Every structure is written in structure tokens, then in C-alpha cells.
Length: 174
Image (cartoon, rainbow, N blue to C red):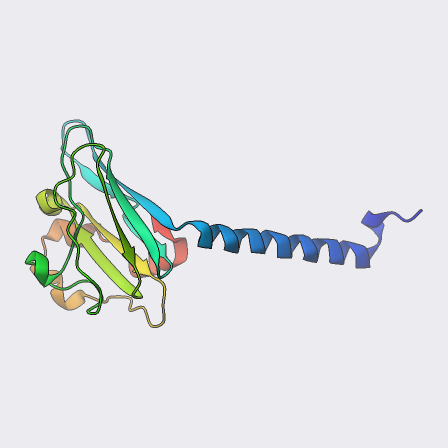
């Protein structure tokens, strides 16, 4: 009787097959996540507010749902876009959004189809640095896509945007 552990050819075939199954499962899992959740929250006294994750990498056609998990505060998810009286910090062909005020437990969803970098903020908390960044995968994602508009945003917002390179490397930034 042959021992599988001592047969190099069989070990190679088994490990290659296992690797293929594992990679297929990971690819399937990434595609199966049609909607990604971003929590809106803050400290109990309101001294600190945030989106979690702040930075996110998704596929074109994936949906993002923001949910207000902050029991004592309202929040918005609002695109940096002239429709919202802000500078453009989403792809020029992309549709703008504004969730309006979300009470605790309420949520808002959008589907992002156009590759690029999408910067967004919470209307009442932008000056406190409550901002986020989503990258929709595609060709030629710029490392600093909106550097020319940084001076038009509060410094706290600029300081809180995760770097594009970090999002691409880590897929999400808490």
C-alpha cells in the first residue's frame, strides 16, 4: 500500500487541487458580497464620530449600505459633488447622492458602477472629520485624485481620508 504523504507527485496534485478550490471559494465570496455595509457611529458624548470602514475597495456594480448605529446622533452619507454644494470628488460620470438625515437604526444604499475614487462625508459632522472613501476597482486609479480640491475642505476631513494606496493594499480601512 502506498503512503500518500510520501509520494511527491500525489502531494503536488493534492495541494494544487486544494489551492484551486480555495482560490475559487475566495473569488466566489468576493463576488457574492453584493452589498457592503458601512456603519455610522460615534462616542456616547458625540465628541468623536466616524464611518467604519472609512476606506473600502469594491467591484463595479456592488452596493454600499450605510447604517446609523449611533444611538444618540443623526448622520448622512453625502457625496462630494456640486449637486450637494461641494467640490467634485467622485468620478465625473458618477451619480451624486445624499442620504438625507438618518435617524438611529436607519440606512441608505446605493450601487456604484463607475470605476474610480468616491469621497463622501456626513453633512453635520464634516468639520469633525467624518469622511470616507470608496474605490470602485478599475484601470488607472490615481494615488491623489483630488489633491487640487483639498484646500476647499476642512482640514479635519483631509486628515481623515485613508490613502488610496492603503485601500488598494488592504481592501478596507477601519
